[in-house]
Length: 244
Image (cartoon, one colour):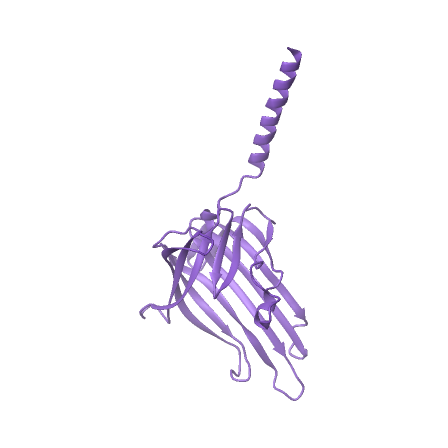
């Protein structure tokens, strides 16, 4: 009888221990911050940064409006359900929308994959908690012969500022999270420097909405004696202005 009582006590202790561990690792689902529903859209102001090179005399920013519309579903080559996101663009609010590009997004159940220009990014990953990190560009072959992909190598995505309010112009959002994706400077950022490189990327996602803000910069600066200094790269800023 004593053995049975002891055995029962051990089982109960294990059950309570398992419950405690389950509660400790509870996380918001990916779908809270990346809802994929056909018909859902987000409209952004897109600020496109052009850098001075041999053609453009000085840095300048061109502003557009873009709409990301979840337009349809698709089955990918792994048999997973994906969603086609169509991008529409216009110069200002009085112009008609024109189709511009298409992307694919997949909620795997534990991560949010986003395919853009044949590059697969892991934009979000469970568990959603501060300081959790993952290799968001691990599907990109940065060691290929394509030099344009090398700067994507070994990016460490990190959750920051979870469940934080965010104000975008006249819009205030109650709950957002930030994903710090890259903040890298190679060399010294100075016009007199012979060369430097900047890589920066960060995204904010709102609960129940999706991506509401994104800032990206990739810049190579070269200052060769006898040649006018020039920059190679681009930058974009996406700021949500409307959604359904």
